[in-house]
Image (cartoon, rainbow, N blue to C red; front, side):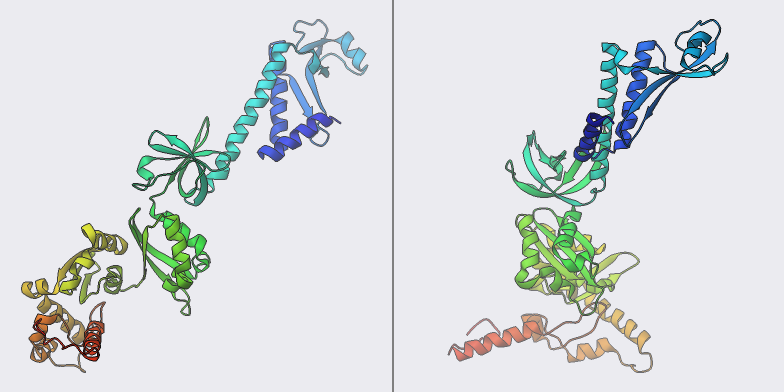
Length: 430
């Protein structure tokens, strides 16, 4: 038994995760290469290795001839008879080759063959290991800046965080631990090349999967996600269990779950909304925290018209259009947002009620024969135009107006009255 070789192979298998069979194959190839360097050719050389004991033997298959012309491939009958008397002309004799007889150059070449095979297998193992983590989140340690890029150690290999995959204004310190999204793993002669990102929307999704148990096991599903890295992210979630609130599950008790993700993203704001198969409701939810009066969505054209109260227009659009932009990405609709006053001036309010009448008549052709728009106009009180929209609740394709704003105004007046202050008469004077 070759104990030294056996221990060396077991150690390599444990440390570098290279199988013993692969290493034995490398040794076989190295011995054949050594014979080729020593004898000039090795077409007739065979190597036998016992995988259990690591004992090996090198043999040259030689043909028995009367007169030897090529000593590498032929053996005389006299010499063959000395090995075994049964050999005759034309028989094949296995002649053992002593590896210790190899010259220095042949031995060095054999060594290089083994080392090259080990390096190749090590690269292959590392590539397979990290290729399985592609499109996933992994924790790394910041090493150093390479120009404007950052080198991040992922354990056995270093990854590159390119400048365009970094959040604007984000600064890293050496030895700092960060989570990154693995974009791509490439196999190169120098080992696997790993590209990672801190701006990819899937980073947020994977963080929720790791932080929220319901998302990981599929009870809560992240349907859509829109992100402007470093600033704000909107995600739409749905529950596959009617007893589980998808938004509440993602937020956690006292916001513990979402705050953990916000902390990892260094303060990036996250809006979590309920998903709906009704595009109008989905668009209304996506525009939160702004309140919406009505939404008309065209599922075929992927366009939507949205009307919001005058005082909510800037909130619905967001700073530099961010809220509307993220809502459009989240829903996949091109969203046209107008204030209530703009909609009235353009006549789109009438179009909305006409569309509502048509939908209502199609659903209840016999039960309802009146003209909703006429009844609405008759019951409309002009003073509401001055103070903001405060009509009764009405249904629409995707929105039902609530009376929260009216109730809030009444609460303010009650509080003012109890404090002994005169109430406003609606004209701005007290």
